[in-house]
Length: 329
Ligand SMILES: [Zn+2]
Figure 1 (cartoon, rainbow, N blue to C red):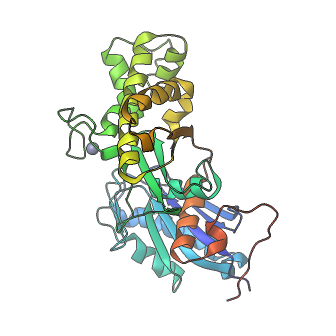
Figure 2 (cartoon, rainbow, N blue to C red; figure 1 turned 90 degrees about the vertical axis):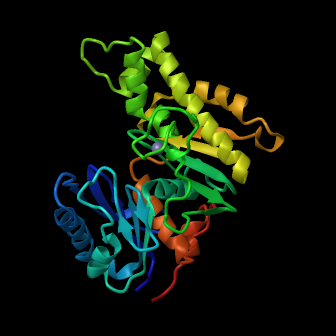
């Protein structure tokens, strides 16, 4: 039996997705449950177990080489626990131990969802083949991850590259994380919407006050809506420029719902980056939209697990015209 699949879990505040991912990054088996985010920790874990059991019940399970988990954070990969902000029942919750009860002897790798998304973009998306990259998710929150030296860099606890909580405004508004002026406090979708409303922007007849509605207004020329996106772009640019100065990334990949605003975000982002990324070695930094879709979390969790286990066929960008390497159990 070839040992050529990775079991991946993508755990967020709304859904728990599972897949057996092959060496091409294709999910060959899928399972999915809603996250009972308001319930106690054991109830949430029961849904994770149900997703896993759907996968262990398939014939393909015998081909699984490792398990990769990308979870809403913060996570602590050093001890196998998670404390997702949007799942209050899980605080220092022993997720890896719970998964191992079902998956047995297989090696398990846990990372934050920003790191997982980064691994997906590096394997098959916009950061493919890059040596140094910052990938970010800008939506309800702002997360991210790093590629350094051609490898995803999860850090000891699986949270490295969490650009959302870098302060870019020293005396700025308090952030729920306890700091001030964080990138997330300025650039997340809810903060884009809040700032537009504070500035006098009003929603249309449908009453939609999301960042998406602000983006529509900005595209139609509303100066307050445009200003709110420009401010978000400025915060993102400052965070990206700081990261580039520190570790010499060559590309920043921006995904998530807010990135769906397209040029409403990316045009002011490129402009702001020219003001902040000024040193010679960061001036050529590119900023591009993410390419991976809704499977990024699953594909990325598989990619990180493969990287950590040294399974090369999952790690490198797929060379053209070369078949899958196989290994036997
Ligand atoms: Zn913060």
